Structures are given as structure tokens and as C-alpha cells.
Length: 92
Image (tube, rainbow, N blue to C red; front, side, top):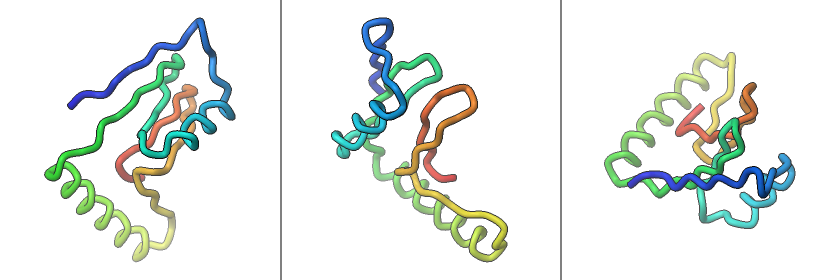
């Protein structure tokens, strides 16, 4: 399955607060925003991808706990990138 990309500009230019509220109002959707303001709506992962992501985040969590010099985040966490994009990586 591929992501759905919605181009809102120039009709709508969401502020950070409006984008956050859109995500809060639609918790069943995984929404990201590109640096150019396009919304990217991601489909759910399949079982093999979900298993791989689970194993990856488990290893990352164990490493972060043992190393103690950082923190880990799951795929529900959104990050504002330097280029202005809002992304949610599988693990961070």
C-alpha cells in the first residue's frame, strides 16, 4: 500500500498548531507533513513490516536503556525537522 499525499497549498497553509489539532482530531490516521506543506497519510503496516519494526524498536530500546546516554521514541512520536517537515519515523 502506498501513502496518500494531499496538496493543500495555496488554498490552505496549516500552522503548526492547526496541524497538531488535525492529528489529534484524527487519531486513527498516521499523518505526516512534508517541508512543502503536503500532508502524507500513511496506511497501516502489514504483518511482516510490523514484526520488523517491533524487533527494531525492541533492539533500540534495549540499547538506549543499557547505554543510558539518550532516549528512544516509538512511531507515534512526531518530530519537527530543520526543513520544516513533520515526520514520524518507525523508531527514533
